[in-house]
Length: 273
Image (tube, rainbow, N blue to C red; front, side, top):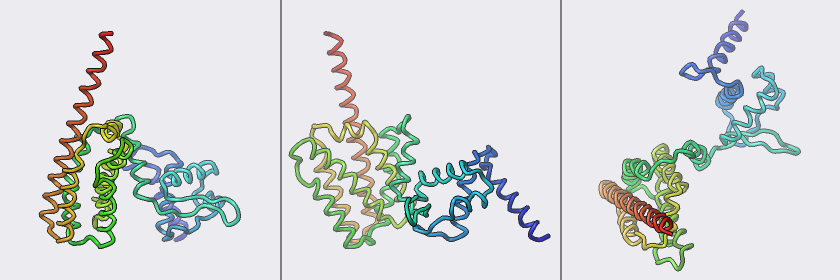
């Protein structure tokens, strides 16, 4: 009786997983994917560990072959598993990377991208806190990596291609700080903002614009921030990062307005002809 009761409880629990918290039914493959995640956790499987064979998964989850394969594909898209063919092949647990997760989240904004102001509202709120947390806790290796990144743009560009690389490297500096954050969620959110900026058509247009940029002033902020991080001055690091984000937002919005005005002028000129 005990075994039958436990099986009934398990079926009931599995049935709950077929619904979202709001009560909206989940597609069967999505529900099976959730159960597979529970299985990975309960079995304490680690990246590199092999998952059971397909036949065993079909029996375990009482699902059709096509449903299990669709669930596996969903987990592979999420970066939680990977497959390998040939001798010794199969499905294996993977370690999802932050970059992969950011790319998946970025697709949410593909048709309705955030504005520059949207992105900088988050950057201004979060990046000063990252700087404050890191003050006095940045290793020599991390400082060296930040300095190598700065060297990419500590000199005037020779052409537009180098200028674009320099502008992206300036953003990479902040992405490194986000990666170093002792609060992984805070760092991830900052990194997501950087990823959105890299993909935002308007931001890419600004980075590629040949007009004089804000490189020198940006460098000044970053050198002062590096000094505050080395010295463990958390309040100074927070204030410098906040000023830098406010400056960067103003610069980006100014460039966006100038580009918009130029487009309007070009359109007006074309209409005259």
